[in-house]
Amino acid sequence: MTSADGLRIREAVRAVVRTPDRHVLLVRFEFPMGRRWALPGGGIDPGETPHAALRRELHEELGLTEVHVGRHVWNRLHIIPFVDGRFDGQREQIFLVDVDTAFEPQPALTWTQLNAEFVHELRWWHIDEIDAAADEWFVPQPLGRLLRALSDDGPPPEPIDVPI
Image 1 (cartoon, helix red, strand yellow):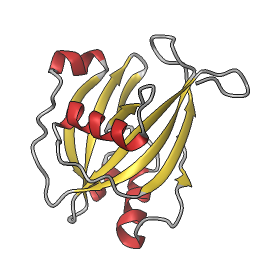
Image 2 (image 1 turned 90 degrees about the horizontal axis):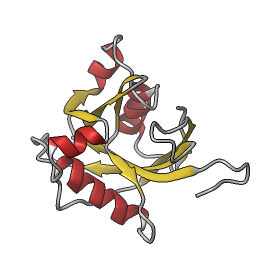
Image 3 (image 1 turned 90 degrees about the vertical axis):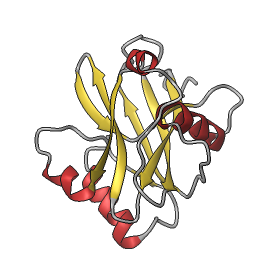
């Protein structure tokens, strides 16, 4: 999609996959510019709804097949050229996906396929670990604070814009 200012913006979805005991499942991306821990998800294909795209992405990356997509809680826009040059940035809709307990991800894609998409690790993090991990880069960058607010206060009445 091209925005009004001529930027090629990829539409995407992500999920806060969380447990009642304040763990969240994150994806470690290894980009040429460095490592990032982020929420699972990816691009919305043409003709796909955000919910359908999120279910597909969670199946591909985590192996989830029975997914209840919860509330749309955050929006995130970041302008940064994609490594392959196809896009100038990404607009994300971020949804809650509550699970009863942490599970061992079993991606539908092979690790070779995931690595080609810069995915190198899937890991459960406790909110407190995120705050304490000074050597790691989490996106959105105030991730621990945002997750704590979701856990303590519940989802916002309307999706909020979160920083890069």
